Length: 283
Image 1 (cartoon, rainbow, N blue to C red):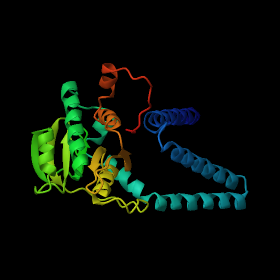
Image 2: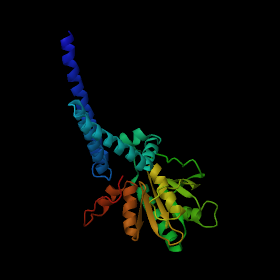
Image 3: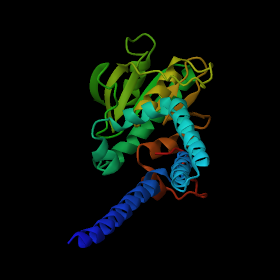
Image 4: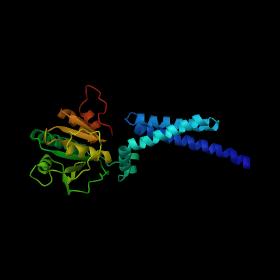
């Protein structure tokens, strides 16, 4: 009886290892492969291999080499925790969002209405064009369906249809809400005058003002995109995942807005592109 149990236990362990490898490989293929995090994950696997190899050296009585390698890996891991502290904090804020598992892992989202989404892009482009030309500062957060950002409860709630007239009225310099951000979900302006968290990235250039730092800061802690129009220069940029991209061409801006709002398939159906561009903004 004891021998039969000893035979069953290793087989169960093998099955668990196979399942774990399959799960890790699935998440790697779906969320990591082809992104900027791929090299980081590979480095983590190298550290794990070095740790296992150091334990093997200790087992075969190569104590000095084993302990040296194990200590080196421990120092590197501790250094990574210190170096990537902002990224780790952003990751914890990201997985702590409302309905994270339902919307990100299971991929459940409300159905999109094609006509409404295309109208939203048009209204946003016309608004951005006017704000840029008149050098009026603007901050517009594009929130994903069923995934409210962490600071959307601050500000004046509107729940109004997206329109150029409404957005320009909000950002007019004489209005009380012009300094804050506007939160948009789908075809609705949820609230205005929202105060966003500023990024704490020490590598960010001093040339970026409060609006740009707020746009980067909200995308570091929430799964959203943020359009920012500079009051000093009229430059238009979009922040996604803590990175800022500046636009000189409104046509390219319209294309990327369609992708952010989930309309890339509809855009391809309406007009076949001459060149097959890769996605410029990561999910």
